[in-house]
Length: 58
Image (cartoon, helix red, strand yellow):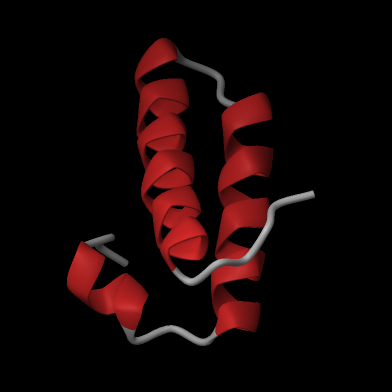
């Protein structure tokens, strides 16, 4: 899946929280720096959408 702001806005809150958790796992398990950077970008994008909706991350 290609992450864009548009497709993130179409996700439910639960789907976004799940994607956020998956991106964090990918970030911690990244075998290469490029994979870490990709996961970090996803974490920031999803986190921004959650913040825009007023959902606090725990």
